[in-house]
Image (cartoon, rainbow, N blue to C red):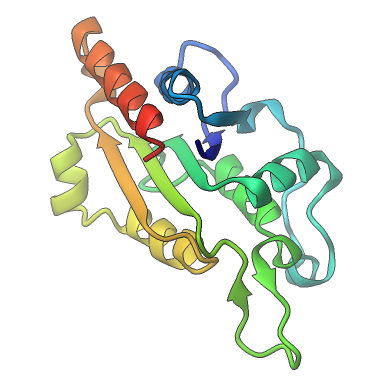
Length: 194
């Protein structure tokens, strides 16, 4: 049994969005397999955007993100699900990660403030991205740069390893049968805590 944190990163709380259904399907599969699951919807949390660089290193995460921070520190596996907007994370989702992964949460302070050591060592992650374009076009034509940056420069930097990814493309044109296949994929990933 693993402890899992699912971050539903769609910034719109409207339940009709595919990201919300994917997050719930992953949670259902994980719970059915006996894993401990926390599902947090970024859209349901009101928090300030990080504007002053020194706040990242000198201040703790905002109080509104305390429960998410505590679950993150306890979790064995993180799942981040979000829609591709303008080639990257939605701004609110990126702002959430900036506030959640404050220095005090994501890094061990070294004796002389040398290169920081990530606190997420020993934890794994999966990034699930939905896109309006074909998944292969995002990966090969556009190089999946934002996904690569998220995996390497944010999640990998604070210690998550391995960081796997799943890209669902052409989501606006998917029929019910395709959506059902995606939901089954998510349930299966959840059951395996991958």
